[in-house]
Image (cartoon, rainbow, N blue to C red):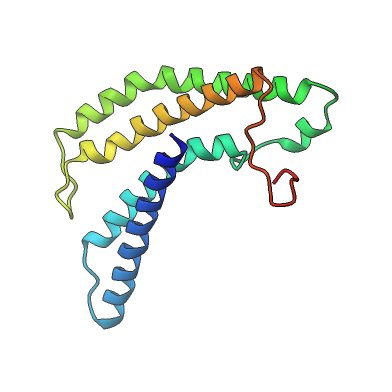
Length: 158
């Protein structure tokens, strides 16, 4: 699952780079294609959708580690479990609304690319599904006391 998300983030980031370069080159030589701004926005949205769950697992999301690290004993792990459970539950609660949002997209198309908006709206459903899955996985790994955070080459936590 992590590999698929990393590949998805890489593809989205590559599309983002190509669209922005096309826009910059277009502005330099005359007119920038109109579709580049829209494609940039969509790529950024998908980059976020694919990257959020992985960032949750690696601890790269904005976090209040200062407070957790200062707590004694097993309390930091229990707080991570609470946060993971809350994130998974909230994501699952929001999924039915995201499904409705995707259905609304079938009635619309993007102005510049004429892309059915259901593909763009699907990113919200993807984000919530991946976030719920990664949060649930993080909860289970913390509960089982299995280390899942990446280690640096020296063996120290990043």
